[in-house]
Image 1 (cartoon, helix red, strand yellow):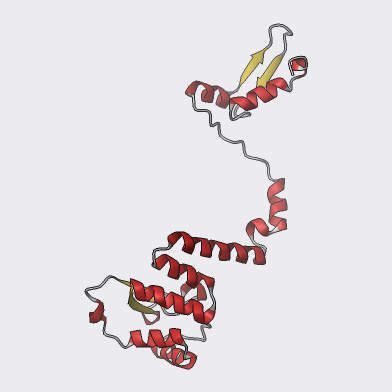
Image 2 (cartoon, helix red, strand yellow; image 1 turned 135 degrees about the horizontal axis):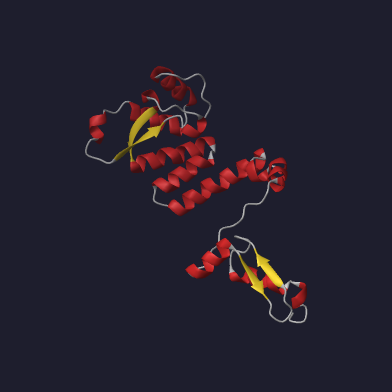
Length: 191
């Protein structure tokens, strides 16, 4: 759907009349209806020009529909204009939340990949790789171990007299402490 300088109800009706497809016929039939017909039913507002097509959130672009008809409107949008976001919206309105979110997620991922944005942009990835790494928080469960890992400590070997220093938040679990201890040169015989 192409938004062609539509900024009021009359221009919207003219545009839908020219389109003359199943979606425009569906919407035009709903625009003529009195809103009192829907007073006893659960309704939702539907953007005639969808927000993903930059349709405004203004009164002339909104129509009240029952939930079933709202799902049907998005299904007709998908059939006529092949925008996957409408398919996802239709699925979610019909209660197929998992399928709807997956449809939208896949399309968004495809758009990001095609536009080479965020994680698909090699320049951004290079820049992120140059940044200093943030120290991970300790995730030990025992409060004593967690406190020791957060403040750091020294391990002293009585036999050799060597010390292995564990800095504050250097290791976020005891396995990291053991790895550092075992990589110390004095522990060569123990490996």
